[in-house]
Length: 512
Image 1 (cartoon, rainbow, N blue to C red):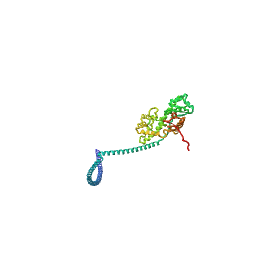
Image 2: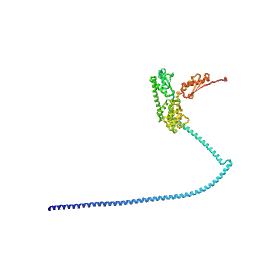
Image 3: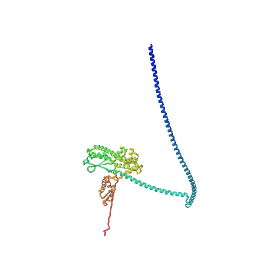
Image 4: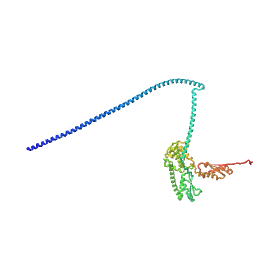
């Protein structure tokens, strides 16, 4: 029992000793941590004090710098103020001097004004005396004399103004004439085109005389079928291996030419085949018309034309006027109008389009009654072309025109028509036609000489006075005229003049 108690006491004593040792150890470690913490805090305090001293020094230095800069700025401002005060004082002195000068000048002006008023009164008095004297001398009052003087002055001014106006008008017309010549010369030298001569009757060469008979057919049935289907006149003359086609409508004539050539190549000639080939010829001519219209539009570089107008323009390829191809003439006029319009400040496209379409109505003159200008303008208006284009087409042959484009188109039309060679045949055909005129007249009995003059517009026939008397002379002129109408195709009129001259010659006797 005692042993157990001793053991227990021993264990308890050991526990107490251990607890005391642990407490002592914890206290020792706690004191060390406290010292380190204290040292760290003291270090931070020292660094904070050092930094605060540095900040204070920097603040003092910044304050000193700001104070120095402010003082410098104040000093500069003071110097500027002093300089401005000096300038103001100088200006005040100058103004005081100027004010004094102005006062002196004003006083001088007042004095002069008083003197002038006195002199003015004197002048008025003298003027009144002179007027009274003049009224007594001239027997006119001042009002009457004034009216006479004004009237004379007005007349002099009117005369001078009229003279100036006349001189300006003359100069303006001279300048306008020179400018017009310059524009026309420039337009004409910038464009040149081929001339296509008119062929009123188309002649077709035949391979042999047998073919002519086959075209005529039994009792003329083939030739009648051709005429019925095409609407042309087929002329079978005595010339070998040829047949002529005549028609007032150039498209019908071209259709007949194509059909006859196709019949010659085909060899089968009878009414049914003729009708078939005529239909094909019509289609071929229509294609050619469209192609010609498209080419003309492309050549003139005109945009915005629809198919109807292009086709109508293509029909003009087969239309001639005074020996000139109308489509070629239209292309020329379009280009001339565009050039002229551009040079005088108008819309080049409008002028060119109006010039190109100015003879549009000639494609329909065989179908619609009326002037070609009106027909063409109606077609253009129906196809929604610009109003200026429609007006120019309608007015290009009128004496009075409502827009500048109409004058341009009329001028371009005249240039194209008057251009050398435009409305004449080739030299060879021209000589042949004049020779034919003379031969017709020379074939009549009693004709001694014959001259075709004035480009074939006049034929002068010299006759034998013993064979042709005065009555026969008139009959001969009518006969020659009728024969020319039948045998030749001349545009316009031809004057036939029969000259019968009787001479009586007698001498007085022999010369010594």
